[in-house]
Image (cartoon, rainbow, N blue to C red):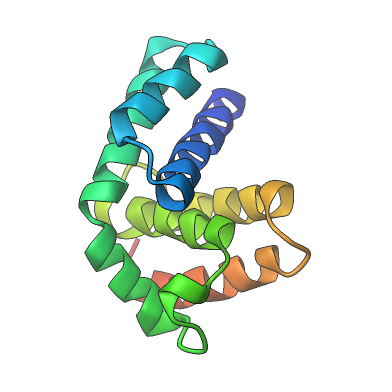
Length: 136
């Protein structure tokens, strides 16, 4: 289960990245990536819901990023890091399906896989501050 959910998060991140960087439509990007991924339906549903909710709540999520990553305007944070943060902040503050610890750990793993050498530390630092907002 953990492996499939991690794969689903990676696909959600890829969709968010493409929507953010190329401006492609959310539904078309998500469906294309899911068709290529071949995962169980419950993971497809997780990806669809997560991507659409992150996009729907992006203004609030970006406000949270700005509050805790004060050295950088959100638009200047590398696209991959920005979308890892969006995904994790959605899971921490909006979704409540996983513990804060798991959401942060998964985000750091995505940062290690897809980000720069500095990404894991940056993501962990911002999310550590965000986690203080919650009692989970």
